[in-house]
Length: 296
Image (cartoon, rainbow, N blue to C red):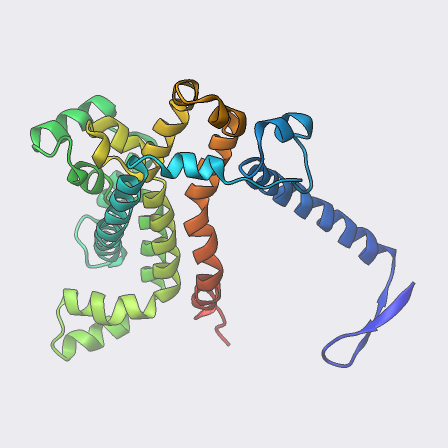
């Protein structure tokens, strides 16, 4: 069909395989991106336009009434504040608990290593249940406080096993050299093992950050006061009460604010911080993932 010259100056033939491959990948990308694009459009149009063209490509008239309706509630600001607090305190706590445990389980000299690892893996398949967890939080006296949400989610078993495997690949001779120089286990972990393990540290930190940003289930169990709820629980509450709230407003608001529009606006508000932050962090994340992957 033709040819093109790549960056190395080599000529590559373009045949039907490349065209078909590009078309299929483009179609796949469209099926992934369009639902999100459509959700954003629904949050920006009136109910009348949404009912006329639910699968629109571009709105005829843009309105921000759904966003104004959500941000008219003071609960949304409490939600952002609480989620940022959970993220700021929770992720370092998760990383310390996970890294410390993973480092201990990765060392051959750790007594009872196999039994401890088996017990950790056991918790990945069988948990204690909600009632024992609820009673534990109540007996600790942290019920209805953000501490119940932050402390109840410590080390994640799957992430712990990932870090353990990475630590185990670092030569033990490096650790022995540090011990000869007088370093203890804490110094070895913080100043040698973690700096050498930045790819897995970056990966697990990103995983924990997303988990903490989406935190809502533990908050639903342990928090009773609405001003302590994280963002996800606040948005859920706003969406659940949309029909009653809209029904109690005047006619002009009911014409522009509708249930699906508020839902899609809530989806965009939830995703926007992660969506706009990730492109700036992606290059550092990918760079960290590639460090140490080439052994030659």
